[in-house]
Length: 194
Image (tube, rainbow, N blue to C red; front, side):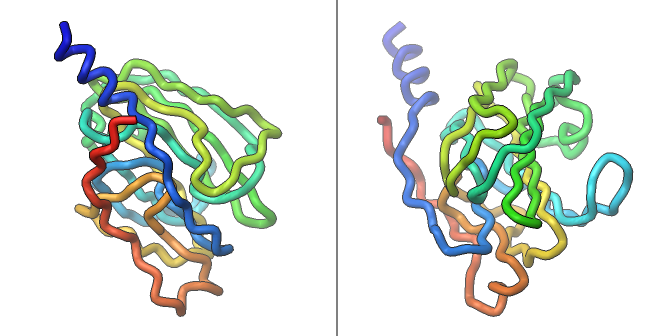
């Protein structure tokens, strides 16, 4: 029983993060391993851009964070399956919550996606709320996936296989910023229990 209590405390840890505040950056919305970076074609369901998918194992921090400052313009729940979150089709088929964040002309979509064990998506924001870079907005319990839909006016630095930290690692920069040497930082193992 003590071991179970210790695991639950470890799983729900919520460490403080120091988020970059330079304009034009998009930060990782979650801790974990990047499992996909792929271009998106414009269609009725989504704009063109790049999809960056992060898989959160049960050992990662599961707090979700805003990738940039902006106003929440839409929050939409979509029922679905509970396939393993590391599978590529989980982005389309699994239960998910989509948060659309806008700042000026820049609009990004963060998808909180449930997995096999994750049967509870928590989202603390609603349309009209404002968020700062790295600000907490929700969590997904017990293994999951978080997708970030990045608009085409950004240079994407994220690469499959990288380990990132929510609210700290830079995934992309606006084209006006991309001449600077910005790269998605490899995450250090997080041993914070608080």
